[in-house]
Length: 278
Image 1 (cartoon, helix red, strand yellow):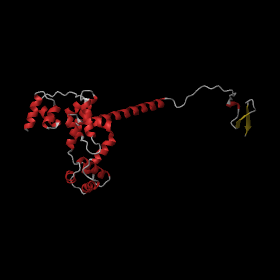
Image 2 (cartoon, rainbow, N blue to C red):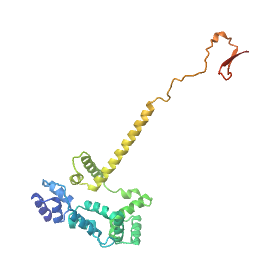
Image 3 (cartoon, helix red, strand yellow):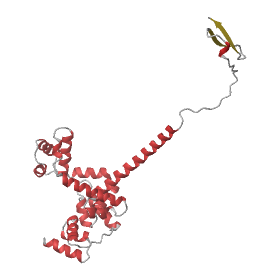
Image 4 (cartoon, helix red, strand yellow):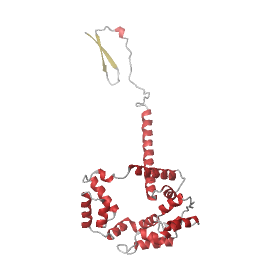
């Protein structure tokens, strides 16, 4: 608590949120919420990071890419660079395949231990307990638990134990953050701090919205084209001249018992009329 009070005093003095959080080892989101509660005005500015510092952080992560490299979190704290910024640069220079290989090499557990942890989850043991017992990250075990649910080896209720009110509140904050970004009122970084939503979550939601809107516009164009086709007449009539002679016959000239048969004549196309009396 003393460190929190000291951090708040530094914020009142005009120190930036990022520097203060790093100095006192307090999460930025926690410090931000406390500062807002105490009425401290925070100046949020877009940080520019030198290319040398970013490159040094990338090299620290790469290191010996298969063994000795620092984690993204360690490099971000060491060079005072946001982890998302560093992650993008690492993905660009090292590639996702190299990162996945490095992550597998740095795992502190083997396949046998992971399988034993999955068996424990299947027996219904607590995820946090299994994580501590086998020293496997909770996120990894949660993915395995989700696979067990999809395979029908665990009930769906295993993934639905969160308070629905909390989930709804978080969804509401995410919706407000996305709306602020789409309307141009806030950047993704500012919206993340204001609504306490991870910036990557906001980015993914914006990407989904843009894809949905693009698909919707394509669907509207297709519907419009279909409507235009329906508005057109099904058949188009045109006036065609014919060289075949047409003879109009007055029905009163023939008795009802007569039968009129029309047959095509010779090559000149003259039609003959044959009247057959019954």
